[in-house]
Image (cartoon, rainbow, N blue to C red):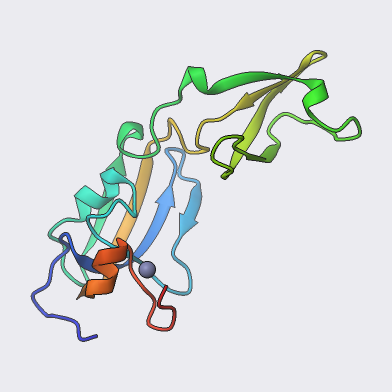
Length: 166
Ligand code: ZN
């Protein structure tokens, strides 16, 4: 796939993005390492606040982008905390605050992560919020490459690796 010299980030463009993601306190929590992240712009593959801030950028261009929680992983939802009895877990299982559990949704069968927010004599309080809910996200980005998406990518709504045509 040839890179088009005048291409900018727009819907239907596959973006190769070098990025570093920091929290408000400067802690780096994610970054593209060996290779840039490749995604299809305009299909919700990246968080909305990042996707909209990248529109119009050219190859080689760099930018610092601050994404508010509501344009990132959402605000912390107080309704997303749920108390569960100790008997919901195997008796020999150690339960600690901050521990991440993998659970399966009874209806959809999908796996998801929850965090133990609190442990007491009656049981635990589970936090179903996304781990980055409520966080302001600081992205440092560089556009490493741009190309037009293939018809298959447009139909699937995501970018394909050259060697992995799923
Ligand atoms: Zn696909």
